[in-house]
Image (cartoon, rainbow, N blue to C red; front, side):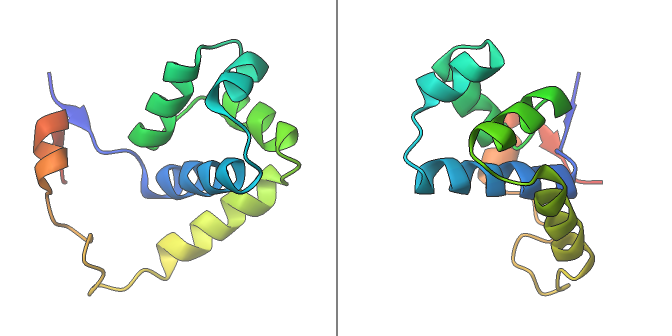
Length: 103
């Protein structure tokens, strides 16, 4: 079974949430408690660039962020990404290790 690469908008939104959590110095264990998961699960979701919508909304609220703003910015960034973006369409070593395939 091959895993698909996370949706670009979702990955950008999750990355923005992770940056906010780091900026606020909220540890993974505390974020995990908010969503009923362990700290490792939180880290894995950030690393994977994907999480359940309910988890995203809960964490955004916990961090004092507006989830609709984060998603809107992620959509704008994805629409405006340059074809010269170094990550655009390239398969990385990490992608291969994780079984992701570009489409």
